[in-house]
Image (cartoon, rainbow, N blue to C red; front, top):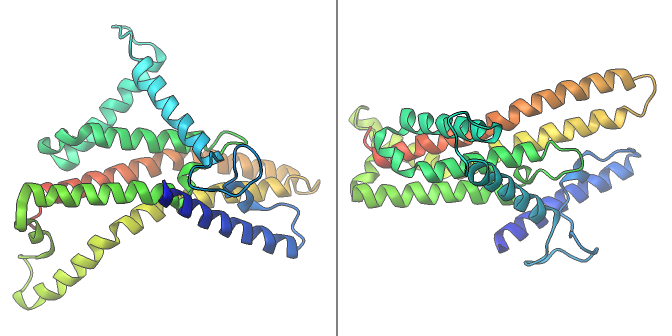
Amino acid sequence: MATETHGAEATGQVAEAAHGAAESSSLVFHPMDQFIVKPLFGDGPVGAFTITNVTLWLFLAVVVIVGLMVVGTSRRAVVPTRSQSIAELAYGFVYKMVEDVSGKEGLKYFPYIMTLFMFIVVANFLGLIPMSFTTTSHFAVTVVLALAVFLTVTILGFVKNGASFLGLFWVSSAPLALRPILAIIELISYFVRPVSHSIRLAGNLMAGHAVIKVFAGFAAIALVSPLSIIAISAMYGLEILVAFIQAYVFTILTCVYLKDALHPHH
């Protein structure tokens, strides 16, 4: 909770700095305002236990997932309802992904990966609702998700393989003289994983939403208003695609990391 709060405050400070810079340059609209973390009740400072807009939309994401995957499938039928069809489609999609990338042994960890995918994809799509808050655009959220994956696969790798898990960093197929150098490169790349894993998700969503806000600001100008509306529509369509693709990329990378933990030898 403290990590989320500090990360949220840092992101909020960045957005507020951008807001100040925009004011000094006489901009009417402020694209980064939408990422500021604010208390849901009152105008006080954001503390460790403050209920914020981030808290609200994280909670709503959980409610939507429970409604779809639990309530929506509680009355399963041969002829599925819409909610059952969506739940079954998501289940089959992620199951096939885990099986193809991580192998049969990786299916033991399907519930965790399914939960991860559903949370990210639902949070991404909720962020496309006008006046909502995109929780997965904040590093405080994505870093926690990425670190959870990193720690899980690392611990699992040592539990399943013991010291032989370190074989992941030793490229036995390379010439002997190059193996120590490649081992250092592999080690660095391994610890960079949570950084790239989290930045990729948050950065793509933040950039897309900021661009939409910029085009929306130009919509007030009569001469460019039609072009701005067209641009907003195009960007919104692209963001729908990005919302799904980024959830898919995050999940499939998790499956790749899981495969490395289960089968560390090159």
